[in-house]
Length: 306
Image (cartoon, rainbow, N blue to C red):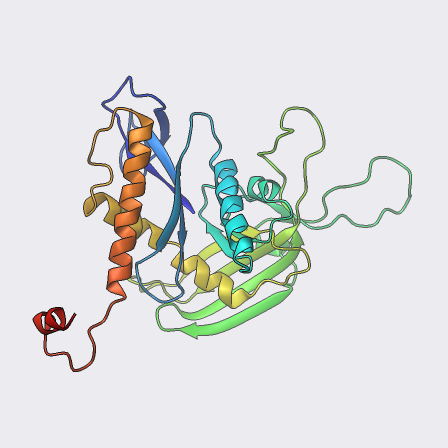
């Protein structure tokens, strides 16, 4: 899942227009732009290609939290998958989403979440047992896991290594039962207890990145999974490296399908045009799967033969 902004900086009276982050356009020296923000939900393939399968796109209303909107989209998809008898999928998010807010919105949902977390966000383990029961408030946080300080890292619970043609030697480290202090929750500001949701912290290291010659740590991710379910480290790192394909989907929708070229006057018109673009993209994606029959003399011959 990711959010893409339809910039409408010149339409000051446009209904539902808000200010959102934009990596390339700036306003008053800040990376923000006025327009509509759309939350896209797309299916990924583990094969190396730049195609995705968009299944939903929803416009964010003013004041809506992207993580809450994403949770609602996921619940709608999970309900459809349960009716079809399919298993719970893995959802991958970039750093603009909050893993705690997503987990709260998907309580008891048959899904796994993989969210990229900031490099300066600390995590905590389970609190130690109390030596004097019944005296004082029990501790809620254990030893601090500061990802910028390797001295605070305990031994990983699982380590996965493999070799890849693009990334070279890949190392995946997993720490289970870690939680971060919640920043976005419904009880924020009420002085009530913060929700603590344990999850798995994943650290991914590679020898090289495509187009780069120097070694570089690729990402630190975390997120809660289904209770009693052990995440597959090989699936986690491959799914994360494929999630950037949605950026190519955005570029194709803008440059080829002219998603943001029209200037609709109402949000409803923009929503209908967005779904038309998704339908056109799906036709292109299905058409690329077609291959000529072996031994076919040419396109005209196939057209005559039906």
